[in-house]
Image 1 (tube, one colour):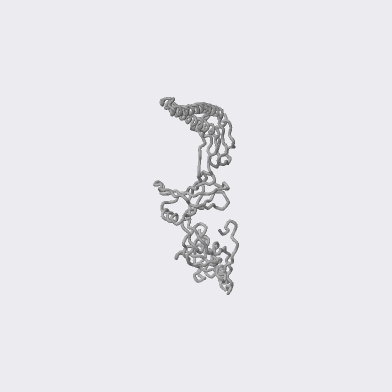
Image 2: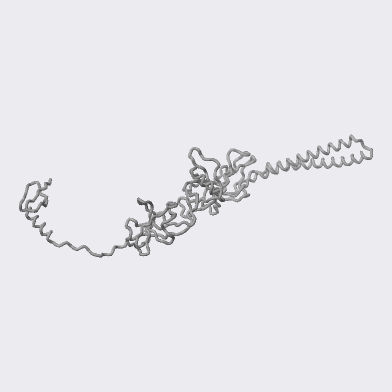
Length: 393
Protein backbone atom coordinates (compact mmCIF):
# COMPACT_ATOMS: atom_id res chain seq x y z
CA UNK A 1 0.00 0.00 0.00
CA UNK A 2 0.91 3.65 -0.49
CA UNK A 3 0.19 6.63 1.76
CA UNK A 4 0.22 10.30 0.76
CA UNK A 5 2.17 12.62 3.11
CA UNK A 6 2.81 16.34 2.88
CA UNK A 7 6.49 17.34 2.87
CA UNK A 8 6.66 20.45 5.12
CA UNK A 9 9.63 22.25 3.50
CA UNK A 10 8.03 22.26 -0.09
CA UNK A 11 5.08 24.63 -0.16
CA UNK A 12 2.37 21.99 -0.23
CA UNK A 13 3.73 19.60 -2.95
CA UNK A 14 2.71 15.99 -2.50
CA UNK A 15 5.21 13.16 -2.24
CA UNK A 16 4.31 9.51 -2.51
CA UNK A 17 5.89 7.60 0.35
CA UNK A 18 5.84 4.02 1.39
CA UNK A 19 3.95 2.98 4.43
CA UNK A 20 7.20 2.63 6.39
CA UNK A 21 6.95 6.26 7.50
CA UNK A 22 8.36 9.71 6.86
CA UNK A 23 12.02 9.87 5.68
CA UNK A 24 13.55 13.37 5.87
CA UNK A 25 16.50 12.56 3.55
CA UNK A 26 14.30 11.30 0.71
CA UNK A 27 11.98 14.28 1.11
CA UNK A 28 14.85 16.73 0.83
CA UNK A 29 16.21 15.05 -2.32
CA UNK A 30 12.84 15.23 -4.06
CA UNK A 31 12.52 18.93 -3.12
CA UNK A 32 15.88 19.71 -4.74
CA UNK A 33 14.96 17.74 -7.90
CA UNK A 34 11.65 19.56 -8.23
CA UNK A 35 13.24 22.99 -7.79
CA UNK A 36 15.86 22.25 -10.47
CA UNK A 37 13.17 21.14 -12.92
CA UNK A 38 11.15 24.24 -12.26
CA UNK A 39 14.19 26.41 -12.91
CA UNK A 40 14.86 24.81 -16.38
CA UNK A 41 13.44 26.88 -19.30
CA UNK A 42 10.50 25.31 -21.27
CA UNK A 43 10.98 24.52 -24.97
CA UNK A 44 9.30 27.06 -27.15
CA UNK A 45 6.31 25.78 -29.23
CA UNK A 46 6.87 26.05 -32.96
CA UNK A 47 5.37 29.18 -34.37
CA UNK A 48 3.66 29.31 -37.79
CA UNK A 49 4.15 25.59 -38.62
CA UNK A 50 2.28 24.63 -41.87
CA UNK A 51 -0.60 22.13 -41.41
CA UNK A 52 -0.01 18.62 -42.85
CA UNK A 53 -2.30 17.71 -45.77
CA UNK A 54 -4.73 14.85 -45.06
CA UNK A 55 -4.78 12.02 -47.61
CA UNK A 56 -8.29 11.26 -48.85
CA UNK A 57 -10.06 9.42 -51.66
CA UNK A 58 -12.33 11.58 -53.81
CA UNK A 59 -14.74 11.20 -56.71
CA UNK A 60 -16.17 13.66 -59.17
CA UNK A 61 -19.84 14.58 -59.03
CA UNK A 62 -21.64 14.14 -62.34
CA UNK A 63 -25.04 14.84 -63.81
CA UNK A 64 -26.93 11.78 -64.99
CA UNK A 65 -30.18 9.91 -64.62
CA UNK A 66 -30.34 8.01 -61.33
CA UNK A 67 -32.93 5.21 -61.05
CA UNK A 68 -34.76 4.68 -57.80
CA UNK A 69 -34.48 0.97 -57.14
CA UNK A 70 -36.39 -1.53 -55.05
CA UNK A 71 -34.10 -4.44 -54.31
CA UNK A 72 -35.66 -7.87 -54.15
CA UNK A 73 -35.04 -11.51 -54.99
CA UNK A 74 -36.59 -13.86 -57.47
CA UNK A 75 -36.20 -16.92 -59.64
CA UNK A 76 -35.84 -17.83 -63.29
CA UNK A 77 -38.80 -19.45 -65.04
CA UNK A 78 -38.81 -21.23 -68.37
CA UNK A 79 -40.98 -19.39 -70.87
CA UNK A 80 -42.57 -22.76 -71.72
CA UNK A 81 -42.34 -26.26 -70.25
CA UNK A 82 -43.63 -29.49 -71.78
CA UNK A 83 -43.88 -33.02 -70.46
CA UNK A 84 -43.09 -35.03 -73.58
CA UNK A 85 -45.37 -38.09 -73.68
CA UNK A 86 -46.30 -40.66 -76.28
CA UNK A 87 -49.76 -40.38 -77.85
CA UNK A 88 -49.71 -44.03 -78.89
CA UNK A 89 -48.87 -47.26 -77.12
CA UNK A 90 -45.80 -49.15 -78.18
CA UNK A 91 -42.15 -49.93 -77.63
CA UNK A 92 -39.61 -47.10 -77.56
CA UNK A 93 -37.06 -47.93 -80.24
CA UNK A 94 -34.62 -45.01 -80.09
CA UNK A 95 -33.83 -41.62 -78.54
CA UNK A 96 -32.26 -39.09 -80.89
CA UNK A 97 -30.71 -36.72 -78.34
CA UNK A 98 -28.44 -36.77 -75.34
CA UNK A 99 -29.77 -35.75 -71.95
CA UNK A 100 -29.32 -32.01 -71.46
CA UNK A 101 -29.09 -31.23 -75.17
CA UNK A 102 -30.58 -28.06 -76.59
CA UNK A 103 -32.99 -28.97 -79.39
CA UNK A 104 -34.94 -26.98 -81.96
CA UNK A 105 -38.64 -27.05 -82.67
CA UNK A 106 -39.45 -30.07 -84.86
CA UNK A 107 -36.32 -32.05 -83.97
CA UNK A 108 -36.91 -35.80 -83.62
CA UNK A 109 -36.68 -36.89 -79.97
CA UNK A 110 -38.00 -40.49 -79.82
CA UNK A 111 -39.28 -43.17 -82.18
CA UNK A 112 -41.95 -45.68 -81.19
CA UNK A 113 -42.09 -48.99 -83.07
CA UNK A 114 -44.08 -48.01 -86.21
CA UNK A 115 -44.80 -51.48 -87.63
CA UNK A 116 -48.21 -52.08 -86.01
CA UNK A 117 -49.38 -48.62 -87.08
CA UNK A 118 -48.02 -49.09 -90.59
CA UNK A 119 -50.04 -52.30 -90.85
CA UNK A 120 -53.20 -50.55 -89.65
CA UNK A 121 -52.68 -47.84 -92.23
CA UNK A 122 -52.29 -50.34 -95.06
CA UNK A 123 -55.38 -52.22 -93.92
CA UNK A 124 -57.56 -49.12 -93.85
CA UNK A 125 -56.20 -48.06 -97.23
CA UNK A 126 -57.22 -51.45 -98.65
CA UNK A 127 -60.73 -51.13 -97.25
CA UNK A 128 -60.96 -47.63 -98.69
CA UNK A 129 -59.88 -48.90 -102.13
CA UNK A 130 -62.48 -51.71 -102.05
CA UNK A 131 -65.31 -49.41 -101.05
CA UNK A 132 -64.20 -46.81 -103.57
CA UNK A 133 -64.46 -49.42 -106.33
CA UNK A 134 -67.95 -50.34 -105.21
CA UNK A 135 -68.89 -46.66 -105.14
CA UNK A 136 -67.63 -46.21 -108.68
CA UNK A 137 -69.73 -49.19 -109.83
CA UNK A 138 -72.78 -47.84 -108.00
CA UNK A 139 -72.42 -44.46 -109.64
CA UNK A 140 -72.24 -46.05 -113.09
CA UNK A 141 -75.37 -48.02 -112.31
CA UNK A 142 -77.06 -44.85 -111.13
CA UNK A 143 -76.29 -43.14 -114.44
CA UNK A 144 -77.63 -46.14 -116.37
CA UNK A 145 -80.84 -46.34 -114.33
CA UNK A 146 -81.38 -42.64 -114.73
CA UNK A 147 -81.11 -42.93 -118.51
CA UNK A 148 -83.45 -45.97 -118.60
CA UNK A 149 -85.93 -44.18 -116.38
CA UNK A 150 -86.05 -41.18 -118.72
CA UNK A 151 -86.73 -43.45 -121.68
CA UNK A 152 -89.42 -45.30 -119.73
CA UNK A 153 -87.62 -48.61 -119.97
CA UNK A 154 -86.84 -48.96 -116.24
CA UNK A 155 -89.09 -48.21 -113.33
CA UNK A 156 -88.58 -45.21 -111.09
CA UNK A 157 -88.17 -47.61 -108.16
CA UNK A 158 -84.99 -49.09 -109.61
CA UNK A 159 -83.60 -45.60 -110.20
CA UNK A 160 -84.30 -44.61 -106.60
CA UNK A 161 -82.71 -47.83 -105.36
CA UNK A 162 -79.54 -47.18 -107.36
CA UNK A 163 -79.46 -43.62 -106.09
CA UNK A 164 -79.69 -44.74 -102.43
CA UNK A 165 -77.01 -47.38 -102.91
CA UNK A 166 -74.61 -44.81 -104.39
CA UNK A 167 -75.17 -42.44 -101.48
CA UNK A 168 -74.58 -45.20 -98.95
CA UNK A 169 -71.36 -46.26 -100.60
CA UNK A 170 -70.22 -42.59 -100.74
CA UNK A 171 -70.72 -42.37 -96.97
CA UNK A 172 -68.80 -45.61 -96.49
CA UNK A 173 -65.91 -44.30 -98.56
CA UNK A 174 -65.88 -41.09 -96.49
CA UNK A 175 -65.71 -43.16 -93.30
CA UNK A 176 -62.93 -45.27 -94.78
CA UNK A 177 -61.00 -42.11 -95.69
CA UNK A 178 -61.35 -40.89 -92.10
CA UNK A 179 -60.00 -44.22 -90.84
CA UNK A 180 -57.06 -43.94 -93.21
CA UNK A 181 -56.33 -40.42 -91.94
CA UNK A 182 -56.54 -41.63 -88.34
CA UNK A 183 -54.19 -44.55 -89.05
CA UNK A 184 -51.76 -42.20 -90.79
CA UNK A 185 -51.95 -39.81 -87.80
CA UNK A 186 -51.15 -42.60 -85.36
CA UNK A 187 -48.26 -43.68 -87.53
CA UNK A 188 -46.99 -40.10 -87.39
CA UNK A 189 -47.22 -40.18 -83.59
CA UNK A 190 -44.54 -42.88 -83.55
CA UNK A 191 -42.06 -40.09 -84.25
CA UNK A 192 -42.06 -37.78 -81.21
CA UNK A 193 -40.73 -34.33 -82.07
CA UNK A 194 -39.92 -31.24 -80.02
CA UNK A 195 -42.94 -28.88 -79.89
CA UNK A 196 -40.62 -25.88 -79.38
CA UNK A 197 -36.95 -25.08 -79.02
CA UNK A 198 -35.54 -25.72 -75.58
CA UNK A 199 -33.31 -27.77 -73.34
CA UNK A 200 -33.99 -31.38 -72.50
CA UNK A 201 -33.90 -32.86 -69.04
CA UNK A 202 -33.04 -36.46 -68.11
CA UNK A 203 -34.61 -39.30 -70.12
CA UNK A 204 -37.23 -40.86 -67.87
CA UNK A 205 -38.27 -43.80 -70.12
CA UNK A 206 -35.37 -45.32 -72.00
CA UNK A 207 -35.48 -47.21 -75.32
CA UNK A 208 -36.70 -50.78 -74.98
CA UNK A 209 -39.55 -49.93 -72.62
CA UNK A 210 -43.25 -50.08 -73.47
CA UNK A 211 -45.11 -46.82 -73.13
CA UNK A 212 -48.83 -46.23 -72.90
CA UNK A 213 -50.69 -43.54 -74.76
CA UNK A 214 -50.53 -40.37 -72.63
CA UNK A 215 -49.13 -42.34 -69.70
CA UNK A 216 -48.47 -40.99 -66.24
CA UNK A 217 -44.69 -40.78 -66.76
CA UNK A 218 -43.24 -38.46 -69.37
CA UNK A 219 -40.45 -39.56 -71.65
CA UNK A 220 -38.54 -36.32 -70.99
CA UNK A 221 -39.17 -32.75 -69.89
CA UNK A 222 -38.45 -29.94 -72.33
CA UNK A 223 -37.91 -26.36 -71.08
CA UNK A 224 -37.75 -23.28 -73.29
CA UNK A 225 -34.74 -21.17 -72.25
CA UNK A 226 -34.80 -18.58 -75.05
CA UNK A 227 -36.37 -16.48 -73.69
CA UNK A 228 -36.85 -16.99 -69.95
CA UNK A 229 -39.00 -15.16 -67.42
CA UNK A 230 -37.74 -13.52 -64.22
CA UNK A 231 -40.28 -13.68 -61.41
CA UNK A 232 -39.83 -11.36 -58.38
CA UNK A 233 -42.08 -10.07 -55.62
CA UNK A 234 -42.37 -6.53 -54.29
CA UNK A 235 -44.22 -5.12 -51.30
CA UNK A 236 -47.75 -3.98 -51.98
CA UNK A 237 -46.80 -0.47 -50.80
CA UNK A 238 -44.82 -0.11 -54.05
CA UNK A 239 -47.81 -1.07 -56.20
CA UNK A 240 -49.25 2.45 -56.83
CA UNK A 241 -45.89 3.74 -58.09
CA UNK A 242 -45.38 0.60 -60.15
CA UNK A 243 -48.84 0.89 -61.71
CA UNK A 244 -48.15 4.50 -62.62
CA UNK A 245 -44.91 3.52 -64.33
CA UNK A 246 -46.66 0.76 -66.26
CA UNK A 247 -49.29 3.22 -67.48
CA UNK A 248 -46.50 5.56 -68.61
CA UNK A 249 -44.90 2.90 -70.77
CA UNK A 250 -43.41 0.34 -68.41
CA UNK A 251 -40.32 0.00 -66.32
CA UNK A 252 -37.18 -2.10 -66.08
CA UNK A 253 -35.78 -4.92 -63.99
CA UNK A 254 -32.03 -5.19 -63.35
CA UNK A 255 -31.03 -8.81 -62.70
CA UNK A 256 -27.81 -9.98 -61.04
CA UNK A 257 -26.71 -13.60 -60.84
CA UNK A 258 -24.96 -14.60 -57.58
CA UNK A 259 -21.39 -15.65 -58.29
CA UNK A 260 -21.45 -14.26 -61.85
CA UNK A 261 -18.94 -11.48 -62.47
CA UNK A 262 -20.56 -10.47 -65.75
CA UNK A 263 -22.57 -7.21 -65.89
CA UNK A 264 -26.19 -7.29 -64.68
CA UNK A 265 -28.97 -8.07 -67.15
CA UNK A 266 -31.62 -5.46 -67.89
CA UNK A 267 -35.14 -6.48 -68.96
CA UNK A 268 -38.55 -4.87 -69.37
CA UNK A 269 -41.34 -5.65 -66.93
CA UNK A 270 -44.22 -7.12 -68.94
CA UNK A 271 -46.43 -8.68 -66.27
CA UNK A 272 -47.85 -7.53 -62.93
CA UNK A 273 -50.02 -10.09 -61.19
CA UNK A 274 -53.71 -9.34 -60.78
CA UNK A 275 -53.79 -10.21 -57.07
CA UNK A 276 -51.73 -9.46 -53.97
CA UNK A 277 -50.65 -12.39 -51.82
CA UNK A 278 -52.61 -11.78 -48.63
CA UNK A 279 -50.21 -13.89 -46.57
CA UNK A 280 -47.04 -11.98 -47.43
CA UNK A 281 -48.45 -8.64 -48.61
CA UNK A 282 -46.45 -8.88 -51.84
CA UNK A 283 -47.29 -8.96 -55.53
CA UNK A 284 -45.53 -10.85 -58.31
CA UNK A 285 -43.80 -9.01 -61.12
CA UNK A 286 -42.24 -10.66 -64.19
CA UNK A 287 -39.86 -9.61 -66.95
CA UNK A 288 -38.74 -11.41 -70.10
CA UNK A 289 -35.04 -11.92 -70.93
CA UNK A 290 -33.87 -13.13 -74.36
CA UNK A 291 -31.13 -15.26 -72.73
CA UNK A 292 -29.27 -16.03 -75.96
CA UNK A 293 -26.09 -16.76 -73.98
CA UNK A 294 -27.95 -19.16 -71.67
CA UNK A 295 -26.65 -17.42 -68.54
CA UNK A 296 -30.02 -17.85 -66.91
CA UNK A 297 -31.27 -21.34 -66.08
CA UNK A 298 -34.85 -22.16 -65.04
CA UNK A 299 -35.10 -22.54 -61.29
CA UNK A 300 -32.04 -20.35 -60.69
CA UNK A 301 -32.06 -17.89 -57.77
CA UNK A 302 -31.29 -14.27 -58.70
CA UNK A 303 -31.19 -10.86 -57.06
CA UNK A 304 -33.04 -8.10 -58.85
CA UNK A 305 -33.68 -4.38 -58.67
CA UNK A 306 -36.98 -2.96 -59.87
CA UNK A 307 -36.82 0.56 -61.27
CA UNK A 308 -39.71 2.48 -59.68
CA UNK A 309 -38.79 5.92 -61.00
CA UNK A 310 -35.85 7.86 -62.44
CA UNK A 311 -34.39 11.15 -61.20
CA UNK A 312 -33.58 12.92 -64.44
CA UNK A 313 -30.36 14.92 -64.76
CA UNK A 314 -29.58 14.71 -61.04
CA UNK A 315 -26.16 15.34 -59.51
CA UNK A 316 -24.84 11.87 -58.69
CA UNK A 317 -22.09 11.12 -56.19
CA UNK A 318 -20.93 7.88 -54.53
CA UNK A 319 -23.03 6.86 -51.56
CA UNK A 320 -19.89 6.73 -49.37
CA UNK A 321 -19.50 10.50 -49.63
CA UNK A 322 -22.66 11.16 -47.60
CA UNK A 323 -22.15 11.97 -43.91
CA UNK A 324 -24.81 12.67 -41.30
CA UNK A 325 -24.53 15.49 -38.79
CA UNK A 326 -26.80 17.21 -36.28
CA UNK A 327 -28.14 19.48 -39.00
CA UNK A 328 -28.63 16.72 -41.57
CA UNK A 329 -26.59 15.16 -44.38
CA UNK A 330 -23.41 16.80 -45.62
CA UNK A 331 -20.37 16.07 -47.73
CA UNK A 332 -16.75 17.20 -47.80
CA UNK A 333 -15.86 18.98 -51.02
CA UNK A 334 -12.28 19.54 -52.15
CA UNK A 335 -12.17 23.26 -52.94
CA UNK A 336 -10.15 24.92 -55.68
CA UNK A 337 -7.56 25.87 -53.06
CA UNK A 338 -7.09 22.19 -52.15
CA UNK A 339 -8.80 22.54 -48.77
CA UNK A 340 -11.79 20.72 -47.36
CA UNK A 341 -15.19 22.42 -47.39
CA UNK A 342 -18.31 21.22 -45.62
CA UNK A 343 -21.44 21.32 -47.76
CA UNK A 344 -24.96 20.56 -46.52
CA UNK A 345 -26.75 18.58 -49.24
CA UNK A 346 -30.30 17.66 -50.17
CA UNK A 347 -30.48 13.91 -50.82
CA UNK A 348 -33.21 12.91 -53.25
CA UNK A 349 -32.35 9.22 -53.14
CA UNK A 350 -29.51 7.15 -51.73
CA UNK A 351 -28.69 3.57 -52.47
CA UNK A 352 -25.77 1.28 -51.65
CA UNK A 353 -23.83 2.58 -54.63
CA UNK A 354 -25.01 6.09 -55.53
CA UNK A 355 -26.75 9.13 -54.10
CA UNK A 356 -28.81 11.61 -56.13
CA UNK A 357 -28.59 15.20 -54.83
CA UNK A 358 -31.05 18.01 -55.25
CA UNK A 359 -28.73 20.75 -53.96
CA UNK A 360 -25.36 21.34 -52.31
CA UNK A 361 -22.89 20.07 -54.90
CA UNK A 362 -22.38 20.95 -58.53
CA UNK A 363 -21.34 18.59 -61.30
CA UNK A 364 -17.57 18.46 -61.71
CA UNK A 365 -16.72 19.10 -58.04
CA UNK A 366 -14.65 16.61 -56.08
CA UNK A 367 -16.32 14.98 -53.06
CA UNK A 368 -14.44 12.98 -50.43
CA UNK A 369 -15.49 9.34 -50.28
CA UNK A 370 -12.89 8.01 -47.83
CA UNK A 371 -10.83 9.70 -45.12
CA UNK A 372 -13.52 12.05 -43.76
CA UNK A 373 -12.44 11.37 -40.17
CA UNK A 374 -9.17 13.23 -40.86
CA UNK A 375 -10.92 16.34 -42.09
CA UNK A 376 -12.25 19.59 -40.74
CA UNK A 377 -13.21 22.78 -42.60
CA UNK A 378 -10.11 24.39 -44.08
CA UNK A 379 -7.81 21.37 -43.69
CA UNK A 380 -5.57 20.87 -46.75
CA UNK A 381 -6.17 17.57 -48.52
CA UNK A 382 -4.21 15.43 -50.94
CA UNK A 383 -6.21 13.06 -53.15
CA UNK A 384 -4.86 9.52 -53.04
CA UNK A 385 -5.78 6.47 -55.09
CA UNK A 386 -8.46 4.24 -53.50
CA UNK A 387 -7.20 1.19 -51.66
CA UNK A 388 -7.61 -2.23 -53.23
CA UNK A 389 -11.22 -3.36 -52.93
CA UNK A 390 -12.48 0.21 -52.46
CA UNK A 391 -12.48 1.41 -56.01
CA UNK A 392 -15.15 3.93 -56.74
CA UNK A 393 -18.32 2.59 -58.29
